[in-house]
Image 1 (spheres, rainbow, N blue to C red):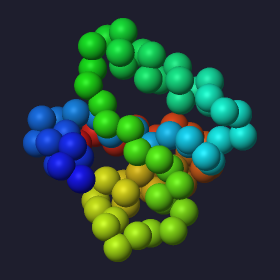
Image 2 (cartoon, rainbow, N blue to C red; image 1 turned 45 degrees about the vertical axis):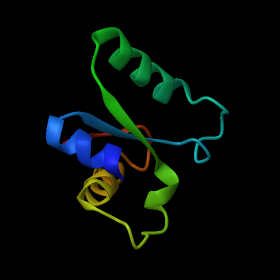
Image 3 (cartoon, rainbow, N blue to C red; image 1 turned 90 degrees about the vertical axis):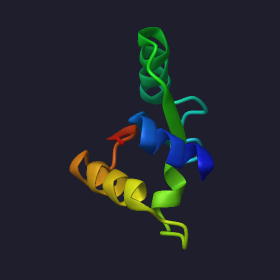
Length: 83
């Protein structure tokens, strides 16, 4: 949670990827996005998209925005949230 709050304050990207949601062990789309961020020197926080399936007590505005993005993308990962 502290890392997420730090990301928000610094304007970093938060990405929801499917560690257990994707059928492949390493989703090529998710890995490609992470590699692009690393190449560009962009800092990001990665969240497991499984937390979007069952809203938890610790749900925050990032989860809400990620779920909206996921819905707009026809439930296809990864999801990028700018915070």
